[in-house]
Length: 201
Image (tube, rainbow, N blue to C red; front, side, top):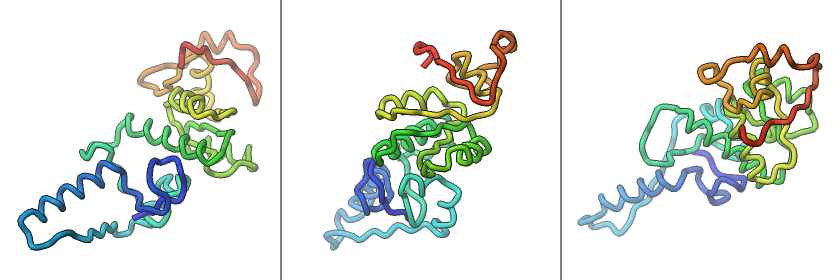
């Protein structure tokens, strides 16, 4: 299991990467088993086979969770991967980056845009790059909440055009590219700055 090496997660530095709710659940279950037994306590060891290899497919390292995977559960109930869970992970990554002193973050819409962004801003550390997917509004709001002074957005043209049109959730199921809006835009250049209406956030 991973150990915590960075602040911002609400977990003890150098402690196990296990969130409060699952930790409490485990403690309660062990205490139940101890009732009526001759033992005054127990030593609990939690291991995850191949956890270190699994962690390579996650953003754990960027969050400072090293040596394995983390035990996340926030409710104690297992649910399929959801939009809410993804948004929570985006917010958590921004929190850790901000607590770590980063004031300039790059929000990307996916893996390819992140690779491009990393080449575009090689001076920034890996932790400054955060994949927000379709939840650009969540990312921008959290950056503002945590005092990030500059949030750079890098993405594909379709999603960027939706953002420029004030749509802060860019999933195809919830918004479409407005061709009339695009047609009314001035000639697009490789770098375009736009102001997003505050009421769309």
